[in-house]
Image (cartoon, rainbow, N blue to C red; front, side, top):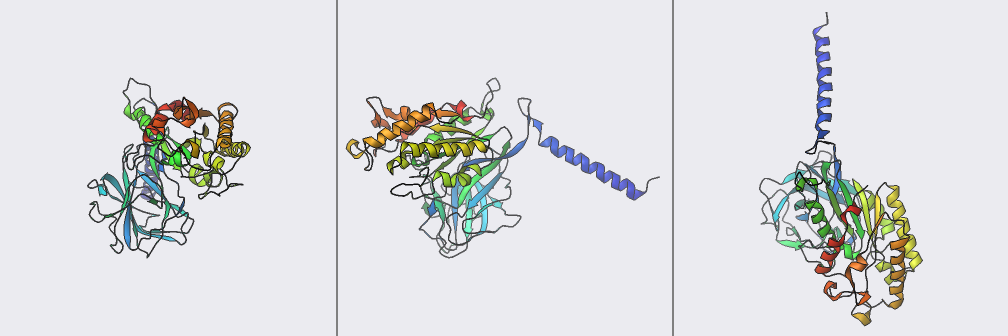
Length: 426
């Protein structure tokens, strides 16, 4: 006869096996269409740090606003101190649903932990990802990430032109990260400090599309807080066609996030350019800003105009684009190339340092993109925004006035023209 201890041990083993089986079943269950779905972490929002800021913060709290583009049952938050000159000390962090301004939905603000503790030090040039936060988010719902910075005159590592307003409390106002009210957040910034990405726990069928670009992806000339960049239009279209938002009788399309990794003025490379680039070029930041994200299925490469402006030849641009494509494909993701849109010289209502010889280089690169480039697909934005009367210029209605960037109407045309099927991994 077995002893009481043996029977208890056997019962514990049976219970453990049962519990493990139940956990497996819960993570691999039929969805509404009768197919099994295992969850995973997918980057649903991101931005590129590009420089050290010049606005210090002392013993105060910053409330940063981000908009994940697919839904998830919980989130993880990544913070980078890429351009910090000293370690960043985060005293406490919280994440909640933003209602408007700095106001949060009542009861939504959740503490953010790092290896089980509420504070963390990020070394200069370093990065840290939080523990999972039990905050369910909807697609295209604003999330507010609040950080208490206890140090004195801390300079942020930032994305400079976020085109989204974030908030902060005055210096020496202390820790108000847990507050859901907006009262303490009397100051604003349109730069994003330290916040790198938000991941959501979503279906394994979900994926991320990284828009890897320059100011035309970053959103120069788009409208503050309006989310009217070309990739915002694409994100809204993808949401409308996702499985969660379609009638049961319609074909299912799995959720696909859009991650904006654009930097104003960005180039593909720094070799031989004059003036030299003022942010890390694509070939230097691809690991940090593209390949390190979770669930990336497609990368949209939309660069080259700033290389040409700084004196790059067609061969240099083509070689750099080829190298980016090779790195993306080696990671297992697809790469979609985008044609370079027209750019006006001073004689055509645009900026200086652009002329007909650079337009010829642009056209040569675009011909290669359309015909011989090692891309899985092509988005032809040049033909979307050009003036039919002169294809080397932007149509006036789509020109924000500088001959370089689209207007909000131009961005809408671009986002509306994207064939969504080219973004999906086949």
